[in-house]
Length: 174
Ligand SMILES: Cc1cc2nc3c(=O)[nH]c(=O)nc-3n(C[C@H](O)[C@H](O)[C@H](O)COP(=O)(O)O)c2cc1C
Image 1: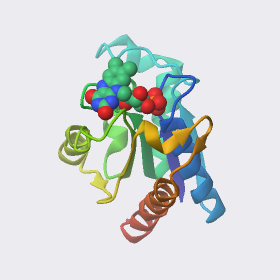
Image 2 (image 1 turned 90 degrees about the horizontal axis):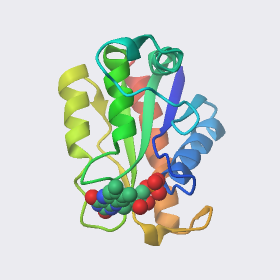
Image 3 (image 1 turned 135 degrees about the vertical axis):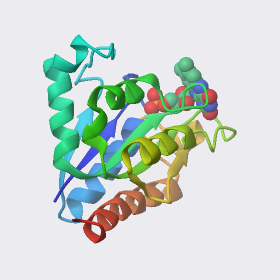
């Protein structure tokens, strides 16, 4: 059973990428096969509802999503939402998301956007019947320093999130 961690931030000094790497490490350490999609490297065309679906990077993204039973989305919070890059990825890959188990790890500026991932969570549940793991990570700038997650609770929650995604995927496999 394969799992996928998506790092959605395009910022070279991203905090959510640190969460993504921590989730990847937790899955690998527990013996799961895990792929990592960094949207800084897998540059996707803007979804136009037409030619962008045929772009080779779109095809690669679709392959990665299709192959995964569980998906951890690590995203920045932008304008009280996930960032546009991950929404674009989902627009481009659409039905590949059907019935996936999804967990969210969010990096935000402050605490007030705590519920901001619910729009994307609802859309994945209602559009694609994803099962959203009822545990998510919400970290603020205070939880990081340089290349490190300095808040041990956030590190622990990220590991728990990743392992929960894998457990749900195992339990709900067809
Ligand atoms: C365009 C933009 C919009 C943002 N909107 C929010 C927001 O609504 N709520 C919030 O808490 N932080 C917001 N922030 C702060 C980011 O969430 C924060 O910098 C976070 O670390 C970004 O994730 P990253 O480091 O993985 O790129 C915003 C930042 C940018 C650049």
